[in-house]
Length: 405
Image (cartoon, rainbow, N blue to C red; front, side, top):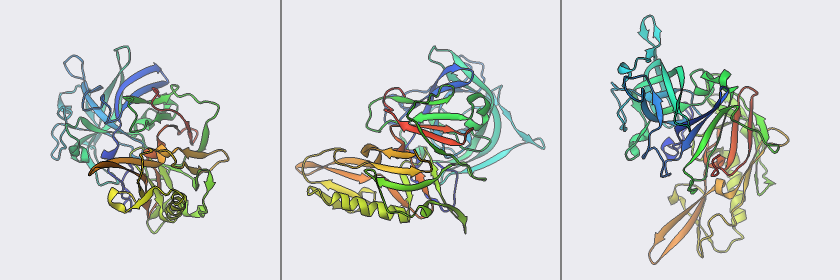
């Protein structure tokens, strides 16, 4: 979920909550955090695994969930004493009772922050240093001391929409100095990695890996990874789109980064944006070519926009899931940088019960944008994504993310 861009309107981050739980510490230069999807039986609505602070108790910390977000940089948690609070269980972080809580001071006054997100969410509070604990798989706790984070005192975010919400804040992995990845950069060698499973997958979790816990197979692809001053997000050079490996007639210039008259353009990759957003001229071509592709199937009925996405069809006969649906490729800069997405990562398939029988629908899980393109989390499913920030490249390759990735 990118830090606020005034012309950008994103889908709600509540549509995708990946939360940090266990850390499996492999060595001093790499570690692994478990991620749990909210639809999993092991979601944050059932367990709490992260430790923050130092208290006179056993264990000596309070446990919370944080949301992973590659599109923002601030690490923050809702704190006790908040004047605008979202509902959460357990109660907000009791900062005054933690002996390791140290506000950063400017002229003897706690340093304040204000952080806004593109979907309208925001947090306002003070910057402090604190000790974070991550439980390892052997039952012991590993800790990171003096991690700078935001202690949220005025928070507007849609966690209230989640029943029995236990998500207490966000773990920002963006490009700015307060990012979790930036603060740990020497230790993790400037790289982190994740692999997002399909929503329909029954596997309970996947992993967020850092540093030497990341491996590279022989068949990986890569493309340059860029940063922009004043932005938390990671930029890619998108140059084209294919359907079933047939390149569409799209002028590559429509994907260019512009930054003229307030229009940013370009393309970012963001785990906090559920559905990819495609700049309008390219999206129009994509829609047109998909419509041509589906015209050859006689059992399909094109639907209006009542399903919430622009291109949707109803199957008039038997349900087929993702069968006969095409793959789509994003072409990034580089001779071997085609980001191939199978149908499961391109479309959503929905079943609805109607009188006497149920109907199956499918929709293109991408939306139109007038400002810029974004590679969202749905399109990243079943791909190993490695942000190699030190070497300024995004590495990716297909992977079954349901297999303890």
